[in-house]
Structures are given as C-alpha cells and as structure tokens.
Image (cartoon, rainbow, N blue to C red):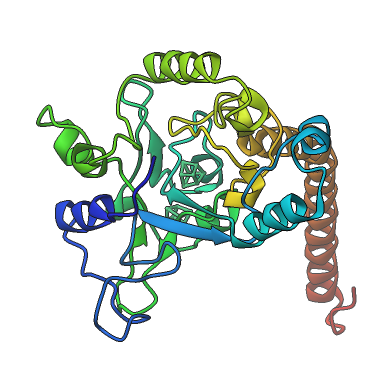
Length: 286
Ligand code: SF4
Ligand code: SF4
C-alpha cells in the first residue's frame, strides 16, 4: 500500500525537530539509506528477490512455456519492496534490559519505549542489544544523545497520534491499540488468503512481541526484519544474569571470605613480629 510519498519521514522530522538528512542526495532531497542520528523513521527500498512468486503447482499451471517463464524471471529480477523502519517498541525490550542506568524505560500503558537524557551515560549497550539495530548515537556532537523513535510521546500526551501515521495518504501505516491492530491484520489476512507472507503478522510474537507490527507480501527477512523466534532477547539476558548470580556469586563470596581470613592472619603475624622486634631490639622479621 505504501506509495513512497515519504510524507511520514518528513512529518517525523518536523514533529521531532530533526534536520533533514540530505548528505547522500547531494543536498537535493532527503535521502538517508538507513536510520541514523537525524532519522528516526525511514522508508527503505529492498531490491532483488522481494517478489514472492506462485507456488510450485501454480507455477506449473501458469508458467509452462518459455515466454511466460522468462516474464516471471524478469519480475523476479525487478522485484522491489518498501518497508517503514523505526523503533518497534518491543513488549519486552532488549534495550531496556541492557541499559545499566535505566535510561530506557517501557511504559506498559502506552507501549512506548522512551529514552531519558538525564540518566544516559552514553555507553551504547542499547545499540548493541537491539535486534532491530534501532538506537543511534550522535557521534557528531560533544554531548551526544541516543536517538530513536519515541512514538511521538509528546503528541500522544496531547491526545494526538504519532506524526507518521497522521499523514500517511494511503493508509499503509495505521495507528491504534495493539489488540485492535492485530484483529484488523488478521481480518485482512482472512480476506485475502495467500496474499501475505505465511499468512501471519510479524511482531505478534516475534522476539517476544512488538507494538509495531507488519503484514508483508514478501518474506520478512527480505525486508530487513530478523527471524527472532518467539522469546525476547531481554528474557535470554535476564536468564544469563540469573545464572551468573546464582552460580558465580557463591564462589565469589567464598573467595572473598578466604581473602579476608588470610589478610587477618597476615596482619596478626605482622603485629607479633613487630612486638618481638621491639622486645629483642633485633630487626623485624616476618
Ligand atoms: S526495537 Fe530496539 S530500541 Fe526499539 S524497543 Fe525494541 S530493542 Fe528497544
Ligand atoms: S547509551 Fe544510554 S540509554 Fe543506551 S544503554 Fe547506555 S546508558 Fe542506557
């Protein structure tokens, strides 16, 4: 449905006071090729192999002569797809789990994963942890920030929807409650079986579930959405931490006790040697 008007990209920049990124286009047009410190929302073009062709049976029925086969191959070569990329506002966000200073928080009421400048030390753990490669660091500034979509939380607070969804002229991007969106997506799938990849909604349970979800007529991995399984990366992180604390804390505590006892004995031995030296007048020996 996306007509690549890029209205959502411009609206995002305007609503979030971001300078248009004109570097790659030589200053003629806003043309970043990925999310960056000036771009929280982007429409990406994926070329080559984006087109999902007919099944083997359909292929045998419709493309049983050379001319049709060549046409089909041409469509495969020319295939391209557009996808909107921004923070997915994960239900169990890896960035929040990775942040050592709670600068990233998940609001379970609104679904927004928000960043707080006053608590961020710029360690960039969130950048590494995010499976969607969303958070970006302002390398160009002396006092850099982490930049990512905040779901226009300043607009939500005023009862408005995010800037990107408010301007989309084709309805390719829709805003609403997660349950209602899931229901609508499933109705669309039911109304056109076989149109959408695997007849399923990306984000319903991928990576533990996301607030931003996709229907796609091409494989999700072809449009840059990773195959994450159903368990969130944050869950794995918590599990690893619990193992570390459970199994490494006990040996660490024993080691600390041992060091304490040795140091105490050593100190006692020193005291005795000093006392002996004072009594005999001979140099202190330990
Ligand atoms: S997409 Fe990345 S930055 Fe956004 S909430 Fe999920 S883990 Fe965090
Ligand atoms: S860069 Fe900031 S927000 Fe990201 S993990 Fe470090 S402290 Fe948290």
